[in-house]
Image (cartoon, rainbow, N blue to C red; front, top):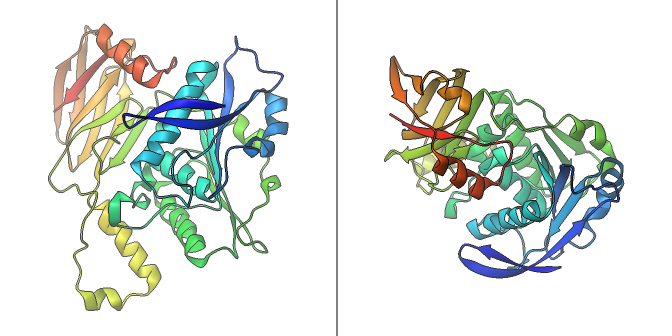
Length: 358
């Protein structure tokens, strides 16, 4: 079907392919698989890989077609916005389980899948990028390898042919190598030694794996790394201020001779390290209702969204920041609840108040 989507203030007529299994009951929340096609393709037929599973477990499938240039993934704000708007459209028309939204994609769609989960990980319960990878380019804000920590708590299955383009294979291998430093919950790279730009979808028991992948909308620990003002949210945590050292686009500080003396692998690691050092990073823990601890790096302000139980002690909050305990007070605010629901349309995430720190 052709539907009008509002993408960055403009209307894009977008082709959306939706598969609705016979088991779908509009009165029962259903899991959803969002799948993205490859370069030059469309959403048509993208459901076929998932149809058997969808029929068995009552899973909806959404496959948007690219409405703009279809010559490869550009890692652009518009492409990400269009993908999220398609997801928003689907969630408002079907009874989607907010905590069982899965995302996948092939080739160009694999790149898009990675880009979404690195920048907006709290929207998804699991990700399965196929023959696609994160990006290392420093131009145009395209380096998303710097955000790997954001996806450490997300179950990931990456399917990749070992004989594919050398840079693509090296990029996805590096991503998993770097991801291991953050102790990922359940992330696996599955390579196929005899395949090129291809993969074997039967290598994963999708029913078992997705059956155990459920998003927690209120995790006890929330992490957010960002260098862009509009990509600062992670569940109940939001970076509200970036310091002057945060840079999305930058020139690495290194002598040309020193850089050229590195092999390509070392150059890539250097680029990622330089980018990470220009991220804002916040780690937040909920110690108990109404008590939190924060670690801030290159972030000047954070916003915490609160549940009713956080206000049980008369709205008094204790927030551990560095070597201090900050005392704050919050009161229920219907505006917070309404704004958050209108923006996120999430029935499992209903904050009643918010507080900014420091």
